[in-house]
Image (cartoon, rainbow, N blue to C red):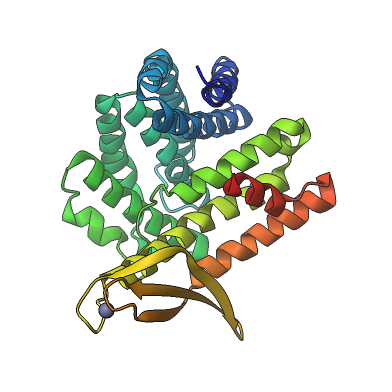
Length: 326
Ligand SMILES: [Zn+2]
């Protein structure tokens, strides 16, 4: 076994033992959050392993399925119980109930990932039915939810129902879609390679200092970064796909070199500049596009970098650069 593979497996082992540890603890908020945290890293390292060696990935997965499914149930039960406790008197439009539904939805992605990897389809089905027949039925429509936070919960409900629709190949009932649909829909989350890369750098950083993992402000900034990277890389992928669909004036397809992507500033806007070449007639093209999500991502990266530098003397940007160049 190569040292790289050993390194990946030892990371998997580390997060697996974290997961097992928190699964045996009392299921309170802090421990459930730790379960989510451990599972995210475990799965992202396992993705690395699968790229490296499919066979040991399969073996590893067999060994942890039980824990993934247990994690899935613990996370769901904890947040679902909170919703029930906040609606005991049959009041479903209280701020507390709406907030607890928002928290449940925020954590459903962990539930789905765990059950998906754990191949527990019947649990996913059960979660969907509970969500639809209890939560979605009782939660007031987005239009009558109060305040920005409340409206956001309605929007998240729409997202998750659409997500389930794709995942299970079920049609979400029209009443449910209509109840939560709003004009500015946000598409469901997509796992992007760049997010995994940044996560593995953060993982290494967290291993060097235990205080970092428990630092709430760090975790907040880290989540912001991961979320905006997700959107930023999607935006860039879309821009590049668009470019590659263009044809040269001679009719041939355009080609893109690896170093042919640059950024420029235009006042407050960040501009993605891509250069493409026609391999037939050698014409070159330069296409500029304002990239808002990427700008958000760079800002989130700056914030986390500054925070880590001021509080722990670590340069995140340098770490990312050295990791990506190797
Ligand atoms: Zn050409």
